[in-house]
Structure formats: structure tokens, C-alpha cells
Length: 153
Image (cartoon, rainbow, N blue to C red; front, top):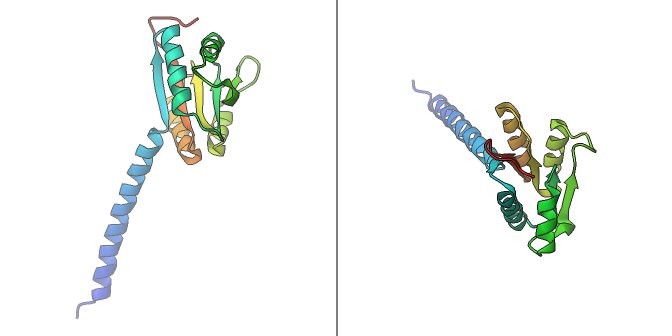
């Protein structure tokens, strides 16, 4: 005698296992979209990146948090009217202790449309964790890093 329910159950278990794998891979792809490392060549390139990020992530209800920004570039863009400084929060790590846990908690809260980290370096595991938190909080995380050949002012 053939038990039809057992066959259906086995098929359903196979489908569940397959859908779980698909869901997991789409989650990891989704979370990697929330964290980007961008190389910056010089001060002019940095100003362009700041302007583009501020324009792309402008949201009247959310902040753009910049950790360790280059103030000269921001002031110049503000004076030129290319960015709105009213929605930008700046934090200098020399004055405030900011560690990975602070960054993850800020990403998870979702109060910012973007968080920009200047000259921050993290391991791949830390970047994966940052990406996960950014995806949950729907906050874009951008790491601006100097190119090895040139220095920023």
C-alpha cells in the first residue's frame, strides 16, 4: 500500500530546503548591496563623492551621518549650494570614541539614510556584519578609503 501523504511530505520537505537556500542567498546578496567601499583618489574626487552621496541619499526625514569627514570639502560644497548641511551630522573620531558596535547600532536604528565612514578599514567578517546591520536598518553604509598612491588633505 502506497502512502500518498508521506510522498507529499517528502516533496514538501525538499521544497522547503530549496526555498530556504534561495532565501538565504538572496538575503546575503541584499545585505551586500547596503555596504560599499569606494576608493578616493584626491580632494577633488572626495568632493565629488560627497556631493553624489548627499544627492543620492537626501531624505527630509533622515540624516546623513559622516564619521571622520574632510571638513574642507564639505564646507566648499555647502558654500557652492551643492549640498544641504542641515541634514548632515558630522562626528570626528578624535573627539568621540566610535567603535564597530556603535556603527552597527546606528545602522540598525535606521535614523540615517546613509552613514559615511572615512578612512575606516575592516576585515571581511566585520564588513559582512556591517552589511547585515545596514540591510536590517535600511541604511546605506559607505566606506570612503584613500587610494594607496595619493593622499587627501
